[in-house]
Length: 118
Length: 118
Length: 118
Length: 118
Image (cartoon, rainbow over all chains, first blue to last red; front, side, top):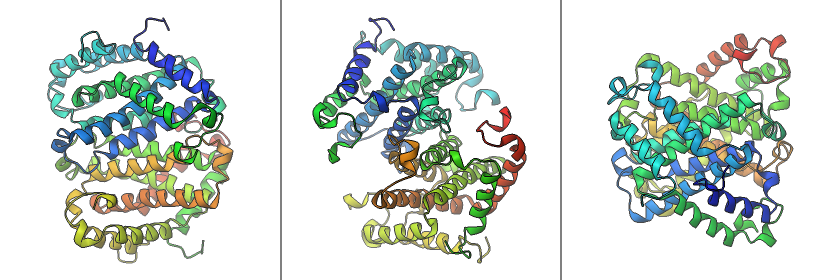
């Protein structure tokens, strides 16, 4: 990954953090995926009993708590991208390009059908 | 969020994609968190029966499949950051700073205890 | 676990199924928990974009698909209970008793606050 | 569901618990699926950094904590079965019968390929 990659500084800092604690031994793709899904669950916990509308109108305190869970998901995703040698930004761009093909705007507009049901 | 933010281009493209399909109506924080956890599960599915060691040595085909799931998680995380007005990079930096306090290198080295067990 | 336990027949059948395929080697508590969370994600996938109301009014076809995902979650939970030597029914009864203490009916009525916020 | 169903007493007790707190309004299939996946994540959290071997050899204290998370998953699964009118035991039996067809013992023995890869 080039040094000027938008996520390079964050990945670099996370790598140093893990190395200083001798934690890379635990950072297998399997373990990092477990940790990611655990954090994703903690994120969802904030919303599980809320209505859709309530989830769009959080208090500032709640919003900060949600942002902290999002950070945890992001951190494990970055560490996984390091462990796997995956460029997250490029992978996302490729997936968006695929979704643009799978979901033509005129056929996908305003509903939520999966691409194989369009 | 400033225009020169490292994730601004990706977020902008995702926003246009959703707007063109009139999908923002579905993008409540609750729904996006559900979608994120679903994709996190699909990511983990690739590893569920693998040993730690096997998860570190995927074939190229498997690695691409995993990268595509990571992209899905990232995409929903970016859309959630837009819906919540959260700066993912700053949130991650704040969380890393907190973790540096919670896990002093000399006490956290080489094991996996949670910060309240150190 | 006594032979007349309500879940004994199902657990027995699952054990025979796994033994006949030499699969117990894969059934560590860690792997079974991974598999369980993956299936829980597949269950949630059916609901991720639905409104609350829509989720209460599924078509018969959709309902059967959801029931099949619930079965998968239940199967991994039963296999985990075997791997851990945990009596699921008794564990649930103990948790319900705890919840009855944590959430007194008169204080918990009609809202969703967590017990430490009551 | 017949009164002599093996899970009838537990489901009945959970229904009374929810009714006494006026909580059925929150128990849509969508919300219960969210809650289930959150608890599944809490279950996995206990194992995320453990080796397979360590997960098979928990201390008694840890084992009880895991059993409590399993109870939470089971409770939400039972409540979902009530909300959806699904017989969990029958759904599991049907899924096991399907798996017996998909994974013939002689071809599935000793490895973890998915049925469409056998």
